[in-house]
Image 1 (cartoon, rainbow, N blue to C red):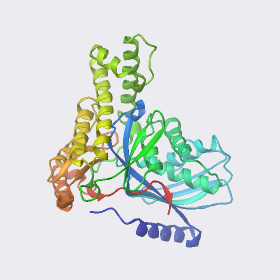
Image 2: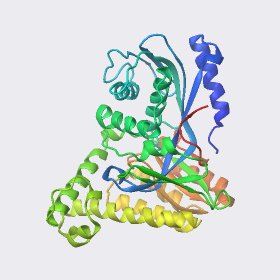
Image 3: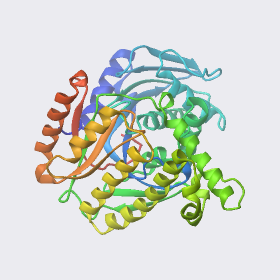
Image 4: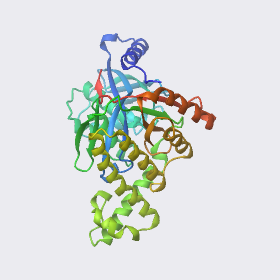
Length: 399
């Protein structure tokens, strides 16, 4: 099935919010903060590696109005409870468990800017906790709402850095900038090449287009919270590999793997502890896949590009050692389905989604077949699991 239509979802959330809060519809503002896919560049942004990202037509929607106080009040379509706090004294978390994201956004923004006005708002995420960076999506929605309420004009890279600050310092996730950068700079009909170390973005037009592929998003039915999985430990293992490789090469201990010359890895990688060697091997081979994938994308070679996605997923499983049994099952179902040219799981692989590229002529039937096969294999999540056909879209914006 296709993702819900943005305009229709916008009208729904305005109607629900305006009635619940007795607010005139014309006073309500809505932010659409899309989810992102990362076809290549798995697990390397936190090491300063290059990545490829794209925003798709599935979103976190935030309907809100500024208020003449420092109070923040939020409800969610997806989660129970109400989040309430004051910008004068922002807690680490407030109200329901999902309030940690609103508090983290406010804490990060308040470190640099005065916040005199709060917001009242209502959230609706199309696929929260799905591995398509719903956390960065909702943080950017909160940051945009608070900035608008306080008449702050922030540059795009400032939003990227504030989101990372919120995640690293106030949520406890040791991630890089793939998610935020993709969502801030996303452009319909483009794939972003993101240099996460130099912090620059190159938008590569989709020369193949809809005639060559559709984006298939298969949700496993298992949500995941990266701070409670092996995500942070993998980041630390990569840092350990970087420090040891640089020392073996006679240099000062490197902080991240992008600080290690490739020649040093080729010369000394075999001397690493086997587990650290696997982490380093994934990093350096994934960097090469990103380079090769960018060339294939710009040449419109979707079959070759899809093959690299599958290779990336194999490395994530064998070398990075992530991927729950269910998500690995789903990836195998997607990858062997008719018309699919490649796939890999998104996020940390500890639940969430598999994204594949499928030939347009097979897309609808393949999506239905994948959903049926996976639900039979994992009936315990049959009511939650779903398969969608999506497309690229613009980044976070007011709609």
